[in-house]
Length: 185
Image (cartoon, rainbow, N blue to C red; front, side, top):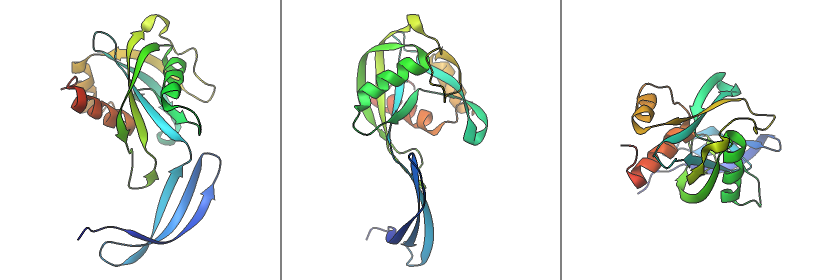
């Protein structure tokens, strides 16, 4: 028999145009009853793994307010309802890095924090990149991107192993990319 959680009731504790926070009453796998807080992101998400012709991956440096840290991560963004995830990936890549991609391919889906967050992120690989416009000049007013860079396989492994790359979407999308392509061993 599969052990699982069961929801008895659900109340919206908070909501705005971006998120909803639910306070659920659940039956735990051992039969006990407890409350469980779930955050639901109202938009979809796309994570882009941009890979240059020489195999280097594009990363951005940006300040992340909730953890007050500058992170090193792959470009990503929300996908508004009714918008194509691939087209949004193109927009996000251009906006955050100045890079245009001739090819975008869906790689898979990751759930960045399934213990609390109800959101799945589509991982897209961007290839055949035009790097001539690589810059952060096009970022949206609500972003704090500080730089864009290319990283080779060894450098990526070192940045992950040393704890420099801590973003969950980046770690999971690079892991998925590596598993599917064998490119970051």
